[in-house]
Image (cartoon, rainbow, N blue to C red; front, side, top):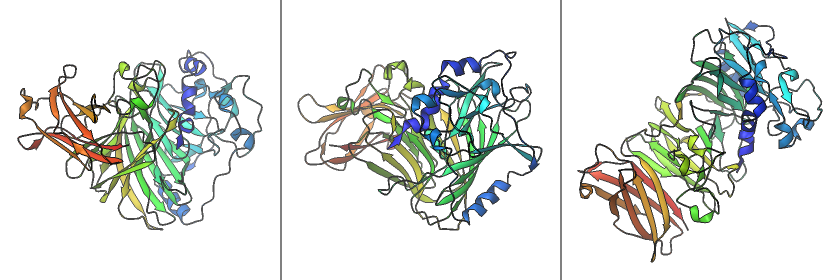
Length: 513
């Protein structure tokens, strides 16, 4: 189970009145201590790949933690210190279209990271300055030493209104990063790599230990961040080409260097939260109809089939592997987009982005793997998905790969009518009813009897199903009843076809007693 606090502690800062006021402070409101850069030295971005390669050939050495007084902060104390955005890097350079903010160390972020800027063939380190932070009287007096440093970085740019610099990407904690498209709010996270996810002996979390930001020129709207990753089993060099907007697009290039043989490595991992919706609403007493950052896993596999797998909050850990070769794309989506889907005035789950991953080149054989972890509270991230190669990564080998991440509200990747919603509940007399709502589309015949219904189950008894038009969506609703009998787990599959050809996405679901 992953604490969402680890990933979202920064969100409390982002929503604090003090930070909001600082972000929109007048230009003549003089900053106290602008972030400063140290002396430069010759540097090329390709040097980072060489760093990762050489690092992998030496035993792992963890970056020293900040003083323990910082890691022993309470959550309330940690959120009482925040970066004053008037002190952002380049805030005094109006022709530079980017602002760089930093985060304080401590609490869930014990290891400092190095941050530097690349400009004109030189790299200059970002100097640590405690005075760039603002704080309340709740923040205690703590020791400052040579091993103190920033825990992460945040990027802001003029996205929708001149003079207003809105944040769009954050790197903080292990190899986690997150982004938002215009109009969205933070939700799910991505990682550089996942090692041994779901392993009974625990998961390894490599760290982005250093970042390099290329200084953008006037008028540029795409920003480049490099990162060096290090962990007990692997090192890596990353390049992120980030174009904010609606949606936000990241082009990712990674070169991985395993220190040991890795047979459970996850490429392009995503982490999210799903507590309940109309599939399991009866298990939770809550004023809201649904609580989740994501509601489904979407896969466009190498064979051209589009799969939609609604997420579940099981009573025990479950792992699903969707075998594939050279996948076209996969990702976690949030298809519930109306306020009424959640009725939450604070969390605004309907504004959480989905993330679509498009591999570049051939990724070979493997599986899109989904981990669903039981949770009874929305503060925990309990959903993880990733690409797991079929073959282990050998120690001393080198693996270069690239992919695109699209962060936003779009969820119509792949082919066929999208699944809009899934509802599951007890039938009036006996059995359990499943209702699947598909969107309307040009291929939907006026006479729904022309649509072929394909429904299958790995166990139990399943009815042939009924197809009706949903007056609210305009699209077809497929409803069927099943009796589990003695089965404790059933794998369902449903699809709509016309003239023998797919009309809809293929709906998959794992039901557990």
